[in-house]
Amino acid sequence: MENNNQPEVWLRGPLQNVPMLLQPVAHALMQAKEELNMLMLNFQDELLWQGVAGMASPGFHLQHLAGVLDRLFTYAQAKPLTDEQLKYLADEGKPTKITYTTDDLVATFNRQVDKALAQLSKADEATLTNYRGVGRGQLPSTVLGLYVHSAEHTTRHLGQLIVTVKVLMERKTTGQF
Image 1 (cartoon, helix red, strand yellow):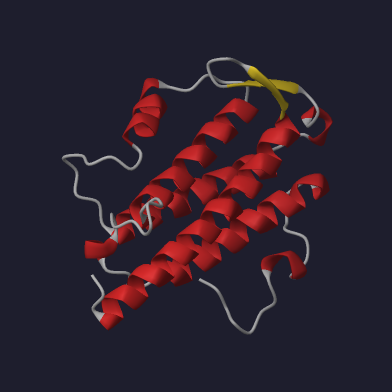
Image 2 (cartoon, rainbow, N blue to C red):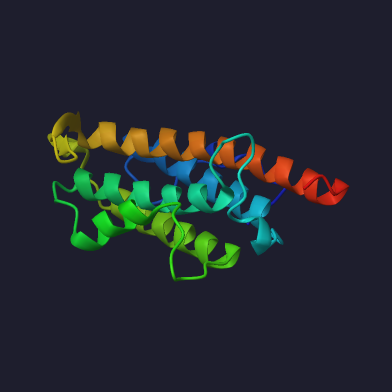
């Protein structure tokens, strides 16, 4: 959780065991984790699948954040996606027989960030410019490109989640549903 007495993660110094070139990626993921956990604290499950102005719901963003991190870090290892990952992708944001709670989805995101940070800590800087194919079309990227995009994508969706959650909370508070 975020400590309001501390500066943002990137100003707290280098993270142990993370290669220097990957520090910004790790910092961004850790910052997103802190902010997301604070944002979703006490968020009501009944609002999880509500959208605002045609935008994606908080539930979608939470599923998508975890899923994309998992997929991008899989591609960075030069591995294909598993059937389980493809099913998760197909199910993102769609109604299922599973009843997700905010806590479930936040915990899934937290586990995925922790898994990503563990992978970053084992990364070999000498491989960062190695080619990696992305998706079924094997579009060109590099290990570093995938890691940087994971940070950029996470922060972009976190921004969208922040706006959506704040609007939903305001509507709930003022009875504008």
